[in-house]
Image (cartoon, rainbow over the protein chains, first blue to last red):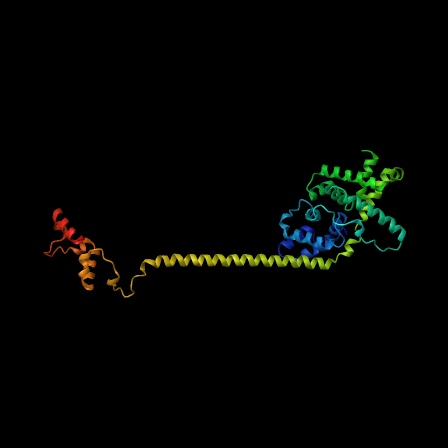
Length: 182
Length: 176
């Protein structure tokens, strides 16, 4: 899914303004637009496959409930990642530090080339396992950079850190994950 | 910045489709094992959860989010209305208290204007023997302004005609 909507489609700021004016269809469009990356982020950061839908729903609900808190400094999607990250943090605390889910919890997709899929799936599983062992900020900075190709400045706003710190977190994460990939 | 650092910085952008490798970077990637490993790491991370969006029922999520928001708005509206009603009730109660407080001293007054003499405690024992019309007359005289009780044309002397000693006697007799 592209982060930028069609030229004719209203941008996120316009949809947020419409929602503030009571247009529920604007909220529905924002959910449709950002649901996939938010879901992927939550899952990649450690949420269980069966929990993702509920967490996505909670992320959007919290976002719209506090929509006045979004002032457009960061993109709406970055703001959603902020909320999703806080949600994961709360959930992690509620579980008293236990990881959400073991890597074995995920289903292996059923594709045409079983051997290639298996190799890719193993690599993903190892990365995901490695991610689960990283400090939260390293994990989330890495995911926003590796999956979304986001700039450090944008990541910094989303995760409440600085651009320089985000860069350091990313490279620390890469170093540790590369050890696992060898 | 070394070529390794350059590849490391640009790998996520290339993996996300926001950029492409230059020929120099592609050649370096083919030759440098560490950079190749990092590229594999980034692309593997990019594949994690690709099937997740398909597993989420977007329509269901949208309906539930919008439904919860609608319910919350309704509750907030209800709360505001409840508080407004509480405020109105409090204002009405306060008005009633103030209004009845103003009416309080008049409660003993009969609508006809007649005086219930038996109910009145009179601190002057001399007046106890008077009947109602007489007592009424005396009280009316005492309540009236001094000028009104003094008939200047009358031969009956008023309080103003008394010297201090006589006045003291009169007052003593009134007090019993």
